[in-house]
Amino acid sequence: MVSRDERFMRLAVNLAKRGAGRVSPNPLVGAVLVKDDRVIGKGYHRAYGLDHAEVEAIRSASEDLKDSTLYVNLEPCDHFGKTPPCTTAILQSGIRRVVVGMEDPNPVVSGRGIKRLRDGGISVDVGVLEGECRRLNEAYIKFVTTRTPFVILKMALTLDGRIADPSGGSRWISSERSRRMVHRLRGRVDAVMVGVGTILRDDPLLTVRLVKGRNPKRIIVDSHLTTPLKARVLSQGDPPWIVTTYKAPLKRVDEMRKAGVEVIFLPYREEGVDIRALIDLLGEREITSLMIEGGARLATSALKEGVVDKILFFYSPRILGGEARPVFHDLGIASLEEAVRVRDMRVRKVGRDLVVEGYLH
Image (cartoon, rainbow, N blue to C red; front, side, top):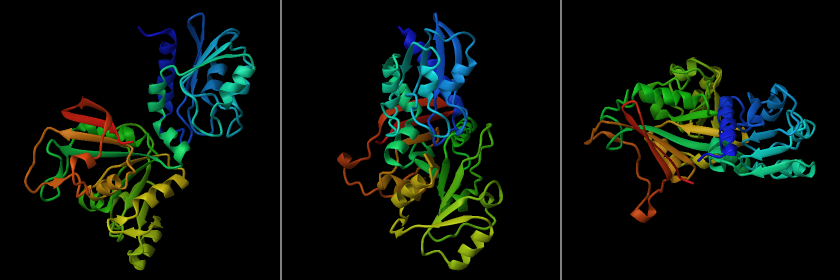
C-alpha cells in the first residue's frame, strides 16, 4: 500500500518533471504543501534563475501554512545563488514538517539545508521515494559530483543489431512514435552529438520538431572537418559546435568560422577525436546532459572510453543480416567476462518498436 508520504512525494516528483529542459544546470525540483491531508500549495522550478520550487509552493498557498508539511524531492538549498536560500523562506513560513526525497549531492548544499531546518525546530524526514528522486535528477547528480555530463547513448537498430542497410540507408528504422520520444528527449538534454558520418549519410537537423520543446546545443564530431557547408545542421537553428583535430585543413576551419560555426580543437587519437577530453570540455562548458545519436564509430569510441552512463536502444522489428552495418565496431573485447555490462535494464514497447534502457555505471 502506498503511504501518505509516498503519495505526496510522487506528486512533487511529477511537478518537478515540468521543468525538464529549462532548469539546467540546476536540478529538477517540485514541492507540495499539505495541511490536514489536503494540498494547499504547490510549485516547481520553472527555469534557471527563477524561483525555486519551495518558494513557488509557499507563494501559491491557499491558506495559513502553520502546522503544514512540505514535500520536496530534493534537499532545500541553504546558500545564495541566483535566488536566496529556500531554508529561510521555509523557516519563516510556519511549516512544521519537511519531507525530503533525497539529500542534495552538491558539496555546496549537501546536508546543510536539512541541518538548518532541524536547528530551526522543523521536523525533517529524508529518503521517501529516494530511488525515483535520484533517477529524476540523474544528470544533475553526475554533473555536480564529477563536473562532467551524464551521457546517454541512443541508437535505432534492427533486431539483429544493424543501424543501416549495406548502402548506408537508415531512414526510417524506428517508428514515428519512437522518433517522437527521441525529439522529446532532445528537448530535455543540454546537447546532442553525432559523428560526421551521420551528417554525411542522413543530413539531420538534430532539432526538436515532432513535439514542443527547446532545441539542444548540437555537436558534430569531425576529426578531419569534412562536414559539408551545405549541411542542414549548419543552415538551420543556432550554429553547432564542430569538434575536430589538428588534421583539419586550415582553409576549411576558416570557412566554418565564417559560417558562424564554433570549431573546437582536441587531441587526435587512433579512433579520431579524444572522446574523454571532449566530455571533460563539455563539463567545463556546463553541459550537464548529453545524448549521443550516432553513428557506429562515435558510439564505439564512447563505449570503449567508458563515458556512457545510459543506453537507449530502439529495436525495430526487422532483420537485415549480411552486409548491413552493425551498431558497433570492434570494442576490443575478447571474452564474455570482458563484455560491457548493462544493469537496471527496462524494456517497453513504443509503437512497433522495443525500447531497451539500461545503465552502465
